[in-house]
Amino acid sequence: MCGIFGCVLKEGNAAPLIHAALKRLEYRGYDSVGIATIHREEIFVKKDQGKIDEVHKLVNLDDMPGSLGIGHTRWATHGAPLKVNAHPHTDCTGQIEVVHNGIIENFIELKAELEEAGHKFVSRTDTEVFAHLVEDAYKRNSDFTLVQAVLHAIKRVDGSYAFAVISSREPDKIVCARNESPLVLGVSENAVYCASDLTAFLPLTKKAVMINDGELVVLTPGKYEIRKIQDNTAINREPSVIDWSPEMAVKKGYPHFMIKEIHEQPETLRSTLRMQEHYLELISTFLDRATEVFLIACGTSYHACLAASYMFSKLAFLPTYPVYASEFVEQHGKSVNIDSTILAVSQSGETADTLGAVTCAQQRAATILGLTNTIGSTLTRVSRVYIGQQSGPEIGVAATKTFTSQLSVMAQVALKLSKKRGKISQDEMDDLADRMEKLPETVEAIILTQEKKIKAIAKKYRDAKIFFFLGRGINTATAYEGRLKLMEIAYVPAIAYPAGESKHGPISLIEPGFPVVFVCPKDGQTHKTLIGNIQEMKARGAAIISIVEEGDEEIKAMSDDYVEVPKGIPEVLSPIPYVVPLQLLAYYMAVERGINPDTPRNLAKSVTVK
Ligand code: F6R
Image (tube, rainbow, N blue to C red; front, side, top):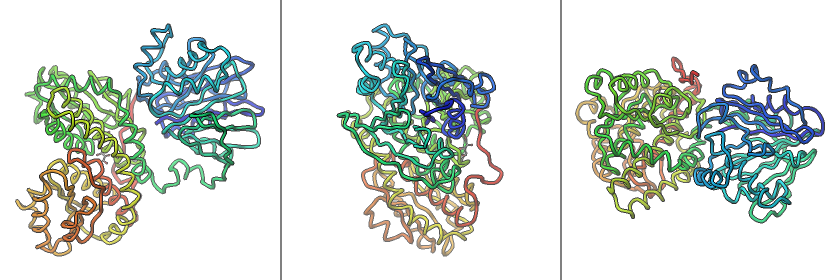
């Protein structure tokens, strides 16, 4: 999730305006920044790694000539956050500049083909292939316009994108295109803008035009033209007036980052499903060779590891040991050795306990693998191989999209590993891959149909003094995560157990009205036994809140309140959609109790230290 911006002014200097717009987009990514402008048919580029202010201090981003330009603030997914990987990316001739938000899935194949044809690459990004594809289109047909060259290049690309392209051959225009990455235009007296978010131009104009998937846009002084990529037909779309404040726009109109990020999960899941084969292959090869595997992490990332251990076991028959990073040295510090493999999971890639465990394992010659949202973080630097979580910056202190993204990545790794090891049939594998593809829709449906109900449940239980969360099998991790969210955001003490353990002590807490949340997917072996656990709790007067599969009448009839999740989710993937109602419950409990969920007391998020 990066920020892109472009502007064509009727007069004046574009660079200071692009710089200011990128600052407003910095929440979308902040590991490198770059601007390209055109002046008198000459291209000017300034870019570097680091936050915008740091780069500006070094190179003065305002001091670039030209009334037209594009800019980018990056959240690395491919290639470390280095100057060479910062956008804009250039073709071999230096006549084309591209900024991009999204993921080009087939970039490895395209890069190989273009290199074979003599193109020279300087970065490790997926985006650079696009600049060379546009160049290649011109080479094949020297009469091509920039629009034709971009259209030609787009047809070669699989994946998600919002591109903005400029060329010194046609110095008066920006060509943009969109597929599954946001793109919006701004229109003012003196200028037209393109951006990945309204936030970028809100102080400049309130007139916006939303661009849809499959559309291409040409910006020229005082004008914009929208066309369909498929057949180049023109689309007439008038601007509408947006009455958001810049602050509301950063949160996309949501009152808090946490709820924005919960709602973002269909999009972030789509992004993680675009995980490059190459990375999955590398990580699964290491795991395949491992004799013992520890999954180490803290907090929410630990819960993702716990769920992943069921995935690895069920899909790939690989035993893995989830360990709290803060306990790793005490528990395994003496026994970890050259035959051990550590998969360290950390959204920030900077959590001290996780890095401490990694250091200990590294000193004892173990192999370190990483899963993180922050390419360029310490974790990526100390890992033999790492894989990106690809969910964009998470600003709310409570991790939400982190859990679902990490699990989506680990499910794909487990599936890959399973294939390597020949552990499940081709049919099962294809079926799981298909169902994984549907997860974004499922999460969308849960938010759309259940949010109101969850809000009402939060209202009903807002004064509860304590909550219980129970789940079985892989959804023990979901129950743990539900408890963590409720405690940290709404300050409600809560306990969580594997449901089977509840009768070995914790059940003595139950008295009439005690809220117990059950996570009850229908697939797999756990459903029947969970019904027994619900009955035990109900018999003692507990208030049962269940997260059930749509149409599960048996559990619904036993519940005081229930939330429904669409049918057809395989047990190994179930924590991904089933955690969403629990995130919403925690969020609305906090709001009901008058707590700001974005800034829970005593907590802060780790940030990357470069
Ligand atoms: C919970 C939360 C924390 C983090 C934990 C690990 O909502 O945000 O529990 O999950 O501090 O952080 P990372 O994943 O950055 O290592």
